[in-house]
Structure formats: C-alpha cells, structure tokens
Length: 403
Image 1 (cartoon, one colour):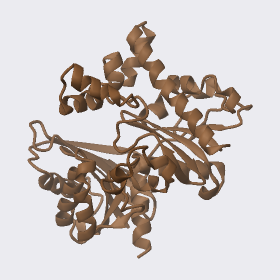
Image 2: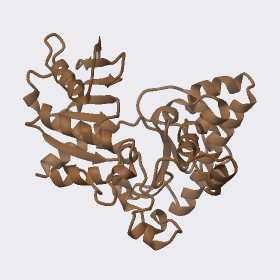
Image 3: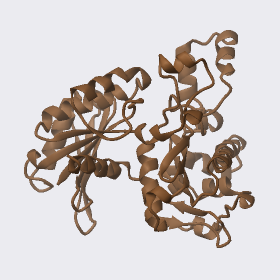
Image 4: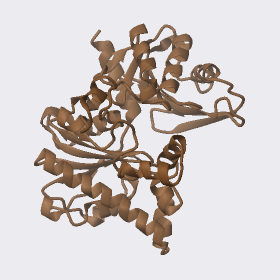
C-alpha cells in the first residue's frame, strides 16, 4: 500500500511517499517558496539499497494546486518514477496542527472534519489554514485516495484537567476553549513507541520524559504510554526557550510592554514569537551558531546556552515529581539528536534524581537509537531520531485497516 504524507505550510509543501506494507520510504521532497519568486522543488528518490537520487527543479509555483500537481508528476516521471500512476496512492496522510478537543485520534477526512479544522483556525492561524489548503488540493489531485488527518494535538488529549486547565475563570475554558492543548504530539508519540520497543516493554507499561528539541521545542511527561503533561500550552509559545520564541515568562510583562513602551498587541506577538528565544539573547536562532560563539567566549551566547539548558533541567525535575519513577529520558529532534553539549548540560547535576550521563557515549555519533547513560544511572538516557512522517503513515494505515 502506497501512502503519501503531506505537511502543507503557508508557502511550502513537505511530502514523503511510503510503501506502508514494507514500512519503507520511497521518496521525499519539498516544494518551497510557493507564490514567491525563486520557487523550486527538491525531490529525492530512495533505492532499496539505501542510495538516493536527488532532483531539483527551479520553476514558478504560483499556488498549492500547482505545487502538488508537480509532486504527482515527479512521482511518475520516467527515470525517477516510484509509482506508475497517481491512482497507486491509496491514502494521503495530512499533518494538521490543531485538532482542539474534538480529535483525540487520527480520522478519515470528510466534510464534518473539514468544518472543524476550519473552525479551529483562530486557535492556530499560522498553521491550520495551510493544512486545510493542502487537504483541499490533495482531494483534487489524488481524488481516488482516502484522505486522513493526523493532529499534533491529539496525543495530548489524555492530559488530566489538573494539567490542561489554567487558573482563570471557568467560562474562558467552557465558552472559548482556553486550555493547554500541547503540540509536537506526533513526535512525542513516535519516540514513546520507539522507547518501548527499545526497552522491550509494552507501550502501556512505559513511562518516560520526552524532550523534542528543535527550533520549536517541547517536553512531555508520558506515563504508561499516555501524555500526562506537556510544556507547550494554548499556543506553541510557552515552556522551553526556543529558536525565536521566549518560552515561559511572566504574563504581566505583556501589560508592561503595552503600557510603558506603547507596543501594540501585534508588536508584542511578533516580539515573543519571532524575536525572542536564542535569537533575542544570543543574536542567532540557530543553536549551532550559538554553541560556536559560546566556545569563542561570547558572553551572550554562553548565557543563552545556560538559559536554554536550565529550562530543560527544570522541566525534567518537574516531570519526575509528577510521574514518579521513569524508564527513560529521551532526547529527540534536531537539537536533541545532534547537540551533545545541550544533552550534557541538561543532565548535569541530576545524579540525585537517578540520571547520570556517560560523557563518552554522549559525544559519540551513531545512527539510530543509542543509549548514553552511565552504568550507575537509574534512568536510561536515550537519543532517538524522530520521524513524524513515518508516524503519520503508520497512523493512516491503522485507520484504513480499522475500516
């Protein structure tokens, strides 16, 4: 069974095609700068032996309709074809950022589902419109395929009220849905399943703390395979320090900025979402740049690293208090998988909590899942590459098999 996974952004379409029966990736690509000058398609085909062939096409892509039509053409293009006809694709799995309280699992898309995704646009104004557009276009390009929605928020629908409710008047939740929703759920679910398999335990008996560290970052407290708490909230702004987002801060700072500095709501929004985090403190949103500058003695870069890893350490402590004994602490996503320095600093001084890193294992690079804890550590410390697209494909296949 061929399953196409689509992550549609406002000016981009990321995609991967899987042979679901073999759990194999056939090709992947990115249509970027849709509707802008310099638009192009990067398409990579994977051979069974693991070799890859890349094709780059620079051409006008005025809209998502044209972008996805180009993807369909590349999938069947002689010389690089991975399928002979678009009708071979039996399902399209769509990443949808916000599913609100309505969706706690993956669903087949129908008119009612589309209506809810559209109604949730105010909750995710930067993401849900683009996700919706991708679905509508895919329904036309791959009209024979079953369209499936996989929601970033779904995994966190197991949060108990004590974790998802804010201490604000009840009517704001009851009438306007103001609560913790959490995000990166597909990634947290994937690494939880990978952790359970690595430990040789059933998912329902695996308890862990998952740290998804990328330009956007979040942590999740997962007990017996279910999300019990997470650092992102009503929006993807709170919690950890991120590339350009502030993470946790005193909400009264917003009042101060508005009253004292006469900043508008839009200006404050842009400040906290696009000009803060690593960028605001160190001058760069790329952690690799920040690490390099800190090594050269840049005081602001060093401070940014201290704040970044201190926040992670605080959430580890908080989630240990909430969960009790855990099987593993898991680092994933771009920073979590590749920055030995962040992992080292985040785990430093946690021996009294049963977390002891082996620095040599931490520094060593290797593909796949690897354990980096010391022999005396009571908690396994793992680095697990995330694969949200594969998780979307697997969930799509599960929905189809369930009828």
